[in-house]
Length: 292
Image 1 (cartoon, rainbow, N blue to C red):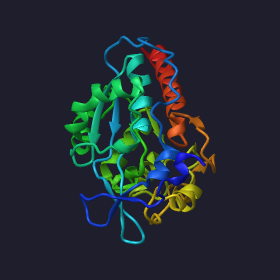
Image 2: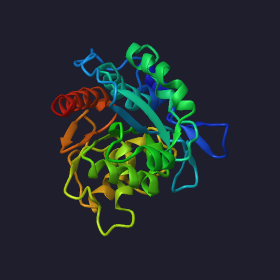
Image 3: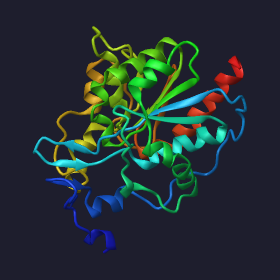
């Protein structure tokens, strides 16, 4: 019998909050690793223009309320955040960090691959911005427009992406700007929950008719409960809501699948982080080579 078989499937209490829980030891043994599948970048230093940047909208709330009244102690998944950004930074793009409230970004540090040099280097380079991010409403007011320096909006996953982002008018305004100005939107796993904000105060979502990869609802409804990754059932499911808004979700499992539909680039899970980074870096480099 393997050592992991003896690990507890009971979610681990988070003593910082009443009735809050981290994933169980067993679930972490199944879902996390000390290294990723990173095997190098493909566009190192190819962008040297110095203008174009990436705007990352990070989560600034940790506690996700579940159906049973328990909290899931979450955040942005570090691999989903840092590995795609590693490819973009290495290609030559600067990254700015914004959160809805201007509060520090929250990460699921229990999923940090501590022996992965690429992820660790990117974390160290962004740590100051993660602790003191921009406030998204101020970015919308002052830094978005036809002449904005942002080439792409990046929304990482982790269950915290479902907290606040789907109801945020600032997220809506950012997505409206990206669509109106032909900018890239890059997101994965639970990050596409933020796309729901695009429909606020509209008859239908401007992403209706798009195809995307999203974390499979079936995992949140089944295995994530069975192995104690989640301490309870989610109050709503990301793929379900996106489908109801007219998007086509391309996956019903977690294989690392990525997809590009126009300027929307998506991935299904942490397993997609490296390939999404490769896809995004290639797409952005191609775009700047065409437009300057």
